[in-house]
Image 1 (cartoon, protein in one colour):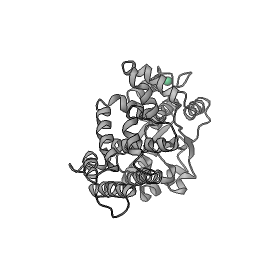
Image 2 (spheres, helix red, strand yellow; image 1 turned 180 degrees about the vertical axis):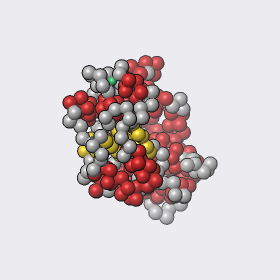
Image 3 (cartoon, protein in one colour; image 1 turned 90 degrees about the horizontal axis):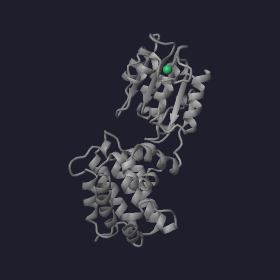
Image 4 (cartoon, helix red, strand yellow; image 1 turned 135 degrees about the vertical axis):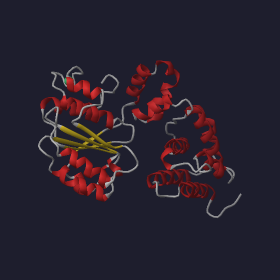
Length: 330
Ligand SMILES: [Zn+2]
């Protein structure tokens, strides 16, 4: 509980509803990856089961089981690449077994975006009309990934990014030894607490950024940069798409700063301003915008069934052509 930014408005109203009994039975928690949906869902579930006065009290038998992740009336599924119809059927079966320790059976579905239509249809009935003792929480990065029938049945709770100052203060409490980098971390995280933590936990973050920025800056120069960036994205070693988030993020961060320089906005990677400025001076605003959109589209379309190598290389060739024009060679 202490290890959480409790200022989140969505989170506070959830806790209140757990305390006064005004909670609903079917939820969709929406927010970007790393914003704290899962942590909030866990604490909310804990509060719903808690028998103490101020929920969650941390002292009652239910709270202790939640802390130890052994509460048998809490079911958590998802979190991997896909959620199949069989996963949902198994969850449904579990859901219809009455709670053993408490008066509520709570199901959390992580990465609900990864349910295909068949899985969502299998969920529909229990989501529409859950047993009286059930609470179902779907965690979604974008509720548009869910079928309209699911969306219309759930109480939507939106998790917004935290203000930069709050992230910085929170991180200072958690990572006092990283004090010097925290202003950057808070700005770079874009208010997403999980991102801020990931940077502080990643000993190689700044080294990786150095490599990616160096390679990306050359997109304005020679065509060989495509190969270099592709290598970094893990194409050469047949990288898997699941690990490419950081590369997309750094690539996009560089391009956003290049755009910020053009339009007079705030630069995030201030220590790399000279490098980004040099790149920015060689490209048009339209090409940078196109590259940012291209990267976002490619990332959203990537999935396990695709040829990762081909998609990344294709994206980079298109980015290069955004800058240098179609069919140009250098
Ligand atoms: Zn308790």
